[in-house]
Image (tube, rainbow, N blue to C red):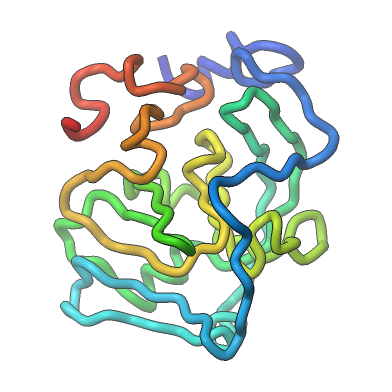
Length: 208
């Protein structure tokens, strides 16, 4: 069953099964909140790049990249959903254009502060509403919600969108990220409630 068909069979008010609407935005994360130091901050792209080189932007350079606004819901695996969000930031397409991946790349690992990571299929990373976000609903993200940069992937559970993003690694094979190594589903589709590793089917992810 595809995502659109799943939406027709979803739960309350068109939300994914098992989700409930949330008005506020709870603060949930693992570990401490990092201190932002603009003079030391950079954003990197590495791994299987087409050129074999690593790419890097300082904070001023990244802030100067083209900006977009997208709309997308926010589905937390703890069962709340925030609907109708407006996210502003840089699209993965912009990053891919400036730092092209090798043709064999199938996945990315999104790296954040303190070594936190989340793996994504390239199709999810490049979805039209995926964004490296700096703002929500016209306001700059707070540090508790990921300032200066967080990934937002509305089609997946929110753990696939790390706060405090620092790098993108291009990969030619899948590899589990932080929560995926700790029992969360490798794919994280909220419309089919892909919450935990034990729910995985053959081919949903690499072996542990």
